[in-house]
Length: 482
Image (cartoon, rainbow, N blue to C red; front, side):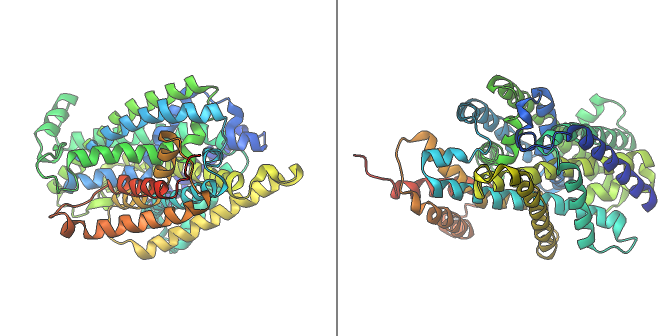
C-alpha cells in the first residue's frame, strides 16, 4: 500500500469512530461517561472486551514470539481462563454489592483512606505504563510504515495518536467505548483470519485440516513445558502467572472492571465474563497459528524480520496484496485503540473519583474538572510513550508489559487478597510504605534468583511473589484485635 492509501484508510477509520462518538455521546453527563448509565448489553461488553484484552501488543508480539517461545504463551492463556472465573464469582459480586463506580472505593471501606489512595495510585501507575506500552508499539509500526516516509518525527506520531483517541472519548467516555470496542474487535479478528488465509494459500495449505496438520507437526507448536522447573516457561509457573495476571490486570483494574460494571446487573456481568473468557482462548490460538505461519513464510522467503517486526514486515509486502495489507492495518489500529481508549477513560475515572474525589466538588464544575483531567491524562500518556522510545530497543513488548505488570499490580493483589480473605484490620497510615517495599524486594529477589535458588529463573510469577510480599507486610502492620 502507498502512504496515501494508508493515510486515507486511517482517516476513514477514525471518521467512523467519531461518528459513533457523536451518536453515543449526546448525553454529556458524568454518569454516562463513568458508568454508561448502567445500561450496556452484556454481549456487547463481552465482545468488545476481547479487543481491549488483546490490544496491539498481542496483535504484534504474540505472533512474533512464536519463533523463540513456540506456543508456550498458551499455558498463560489457560491460566487466564481460571482467573476470569475468580473474577466472575468472587470479585464481581463484591463490586455489585457495594455499587462501586471505582473499584478502589472498596479499600477505603475495608481499611481506610490511605489504603484507598495507595490502591488508586498503584492502578494509575500500572495502567499508564500498560497503555503506554500498547500505544508505543502501534505508534512505532505506524512510524515505520507511514510517518518516516513523509518526514514526520515520532513524537508527532504519538501526539496525533493520543489526540485522535481524545476526540472520540471526551464526551461519551465508557458509553462510547463499549460500541467502538465492538467494532474494533471485529476489525481485529477479520484481519487475523484474512492474513491466515493468505499465508495458508502461500504455503500450499488448502484446507483447515491441512493447516491443522501443519501446525501440529511443527516443532513451533510445542505448548506445554514440563521438563525444567528453572525454565521461565515451565507450565506451573506460566499457568499460575496467567491466572494472577488476569485477576490483577482485569479483576483489580478499573479499566476492565468499569466495562463490566456498566451491565444492568450482576448476572449479566457474569455471563459477559464467562463467555468472554471461553472465546478468548480460541482467539489466542488464532494468533499463535498466525505466528507459526508467519515464521514459516519468513523462513521460506528469506525474510529476516524478527519478534515485533515480523508481522508488520510481511503484512506490508507488495505480494501480500492491498486487501490483506489494509486489513492488517485496520486490525492493528483497532487492537491498539480498543485498549488505549478505555485506558484513557478509566484513568480519567480513577483520578476523578479516587484522587480528587469529584463527587465532593460543586456540581456545577464537576463536568469541567472531568474534561480537564481527560486532557491532562492524555498529555501524560504522550510523555510516557516518548520516554519508552528512548528506553526500549529490540524487545518483544508483550513480555516487557507482563514484567512491568508484575511490579506495579503486585501491591493491588496483596491489598485485595488481604481484604477479602482475612477479617483483620491494619494500621492504614503504613500501607503506602508496604506498597513501595514489596516491589523493591520482588525486584531484588528476581535479579538474584538464579544464584539464590540453584538456577531457578523467575518468570511471570514475580506478580504472585510481589502480592505475597504485600500480604505479609500487611500482616506486620495489622491491628491487634480487642
